[in-house]
Amino acid sequence: MNKYLTTALTGVLAFGATLANAADDVTLQLKWVTQAQFAGYYVALDKGFYGEEDLNVTIKPGGPDIAPAQVIAGGGADVVLDWMPSALASREKGLDLVNIAQPFKSSGMMLTCRKDAGVASPADFPDKTLGVWFFGNEYPFLSWMSKLGLKTDGSAGGVTVLKQGFNVDPLLQGQAACVSTMTYNEYWQVIDAGLTPDDLQVFKYEEQGVATLEDGMYVMGENLKDDAFKDKMVRFVRASMKGWKYAESNPDEAAMIVLDNDASGAQTEKHQKRMMAEVAKLTAGSNGALDVDAYQRTVDSLLSGGSDPVITKEPVDAWTHEISDLALK
Image (cartoon, rainbow, N blue to C red; front, side, top):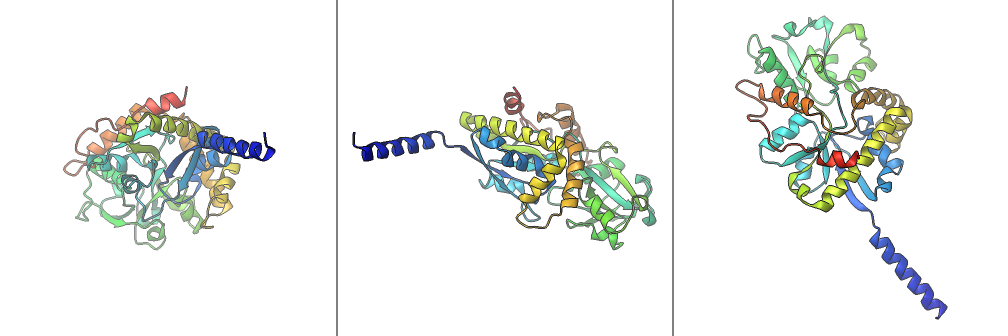
C-alpha cells in the first residue's frame, strides 16, 4: 500500500477513535465566586479525577447576580450547587430540582454579633437590626426567627432585617447589631477588620438547632429519566467526592489549586488556606450521599414558619440516592 495512503488512513482511524472516546461534557454552576468553598471540584479538575471518568468538566463561578436555579432552568448548566432551602423553595415554585449528592455534612452559617451592641443571647434579638443575605440565603434565618417567635417586619418586639450585601460593613459601621457570616469566610473578614473574637458573640445555626443543608448538587428531575445523563452524573459525583476527600487531606494544596483557578485575582493565599481548613470541617464525614435525617430536619425547619413558611408542603421526590449509590460502589 502507498505509504502516503497508509498515513492518511492511520490519521482517519485515529481521529475516529478520538471521536469514539470523546469525554462527556458537564457544566457545573457554582453558588458563589471561585474560592475554597468549592475546592473539591477544582481539585478534581486539576488532579485529573474528572478526566479519569471520561468527563470534560466546565466550572462556572457564581456571583451576586447569579442564581443557580435560574441558570439550570435556562439550560446553562447540567448540575448546580445550591443551599437546600433555596432549592426547595424553587422546587415549590415549579422548578424540578433534585438533590443527587450532598458533600457538605454540616452548616457553616452563623450570625455574628457585636457584644457592645447588647447581644449576648438570642433573647437580646428583639428590637435589634440584623443583617441578612437574600437571593435564597434568607430562608434559614427566617425559619430561625419564626422558631423564636420574632417578627421580621421591624415592628416593636421583633427584629429589623437589613438586606446585607456580601460583606460585613453593617457590623463594622454599627448599622446592625449582627450580620450573617459563614464559618469559613465572612467571620474572618470581621476579624481581619480589627475586631477580636472577644468582641463578638457568635451563634452557629448548627448549635441553635436550625441548621439547613448547604452546597448540595442539584439537577433537573427530567434529566434523570435519561440513562446517559444518569451515567454521566454517577461519574461526576464519584470524581467530585474524590476531589473533596483529597482537599480535606491536603488543605493547603487544595487552597493553592483554588487560587490557580481564580481568574479574578481577588483571593489571597492566607484567606483561602484559612477557608479550606474551615470548609474541611463541614465536608468531613460525608461520602456524598444525602443524610435523610438531615434532609428531614431541613424540611421541618422550612415548614415551621407559622403564617409565612419557606415552603408550604412536604416536598416529593426532591432527592435521590440512585446517583450517589452507584457512584460509591
